[in-house]
Length: 381
Image 1 (cartoon, rainbow, N blue to C red):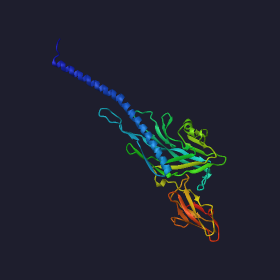
Image 2 (cartoon, rainbow, N blue to C red):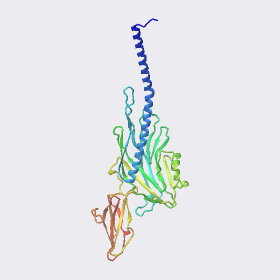
Image 3 (cartoon, rainbow, N blue to C red):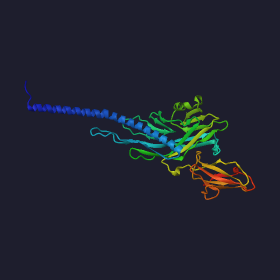
Image 4 (cartoon, rainbow, N blue to C red):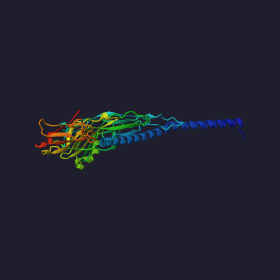
């Protein structure tokens, strides 16, 4: 057998190296074409799950701001930084958009307020109050059918390109006799890099519920905007129906509005609130009326006195602090009334505290009986 010469052996080594390098290049190309996109898809799917969690946290903070009256802040991962590689090409950092859109209006009608400190709203209806949805729109490379994540009416939803929605988290606004409706205004603001901090400022905080029932021959009716289907709400509210021990008589979705009718003859604890995204003090709801909490319609004997506590509240039925309230007496009335705080710059003007309340003292003359109900109280601009 003939031995290979040195030149021939060298050629064989070169050919082997070339073949090996070609094999490596082919593997790298195959990895770039098949494995890298799969890794990118997995990364994007994990990010979508993280956004679901962040908007669930934002929803909880909105409710907290609405019911506790304190501003909150939540960070949302609006973007992602794909893993970099020296050998393989990966997508650059991408960021989705977190925005607010007008959803429609919320209202509660056919209501009578059962508390002494509150008057029934005009027309026996609260609202309509405008409200927004908050939507995260992703920008992915491989996850082409990724859903938008929507925060709407206290629920976090995934809304897919075909229009279908699935509920990620959140509960119904009706739970037994408790009705909690949080309206959202304002905008989430701008992202800083791949994260966006969303502040929620209570413009009208429902720290306490208002007791309401239905007006005669009517039923309390709630209307809220929705992106969900009739079937989805049937499932969500099933446990709250009269047949299952709850108080929901009917639930109907039509033209993007959910209408819920409640059982008559029941006293409900109603919380209505407004939270402003990125808002400030100027976003607070102004007081619209005054109610008497205690000491109203009392007879005061000659030479006696009676303390009267009043409360200023806004169009959502929630107390408002820092409001000037004036006490007004009829012409020729034999008594007199004085504020107890002397902060209003007048003896007959009081300023509400953090709980929205202020107090006055009604005094009779030495010879006459007076009734505290003769005094009226108004918001002073």
